[in-house]
Length: 211
Image 1 (cartoon, helix red, strand yellow):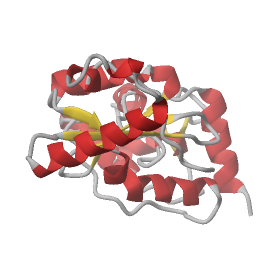
Image 2 (spheres, one colour):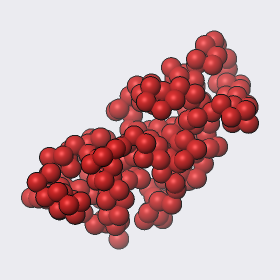
Image 3 (cartoon, rainbow, N blue to C red):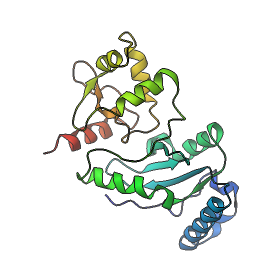
Image 4 (tube, helix red, strand yellow):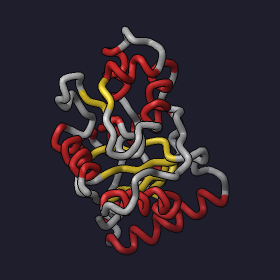
């Protein structure tokens, strides 16, 4: 996989800074956005940096705060809508700043190339709370190539009857791939649901099952 930024992107949040950027040639637009991100970072007015990368399971939006990676979104989630949600829930001060997501993008490259079995980037779990955060924290510990059932996860987090709530937590996981909710299956071994779609879930499990 090669991580590439969509320099022609004109999301609803970053254009709040400069609504006429769509008329600029893509290369110049990329340089302008980079300069804007650097200035915003230096002035302390950039709260959320984002970057879009290509992957074998489609384009992924990566977003990070100063605390760490806060969102990984599949294209089917609608990246513009995801950015708008981040603006509403965390901060409207969002800019495309690829350099800030360099480590996360590189580690995803390695993962999809079969050279990485776990991620070593700081995470910001601000988008998860209560029981959902408890489930997310458990999911972080499911090893590469290992699967658990929704029932097993419910038991592991101390609430055996909360199988449906575990499913909801997985379905709303703000950090798919990095926090591996794809490793959670139904008790009969079938896939269950997945925020990125069942094709993506199958692809991730196949990648991790490869020798």
